[in-house]
Image: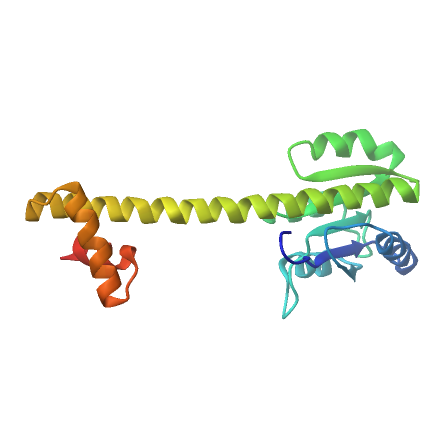
Length: 200
């Protein structure tokens, strides 16, 4: 992120505690756009709480899940989590014999499927890549939101100018000057003045 580093929240989920510990070790070696904070989950319910940010926790940016979870939840549960949380990046680890089927099931979702057993370096690189992509997408979303806000402001001001031209027989230059002067004299934004004009 520009200006300051972002904390990336990763959720390590597996059916056995030792598998969760292995995932946590791998995540500690991941390079990310900012600091990494690692949480863990053993059940699908814990995964759901972790990705949505239950309590005071921030929602997870990345979920790494080794199937099945301790409550027996499988791939379908993770697919449901992905569909409900489209901003979440997921690395899903499955047995070799299920790899092709699961890859096909996840083809339209932000889920990267890895066959077990796997090389630690492959998983670490995949996690690094997904965190970088997630951060870049979040930055683009913020920029898009800013541009939408600016466009909305321009539309409101333009509509107010048209109203002034129609009701007070001003020229476009006079309407522009009127909005700027009112905003300056009354310590308001041009948008606030424009909204007042449109609400009259």
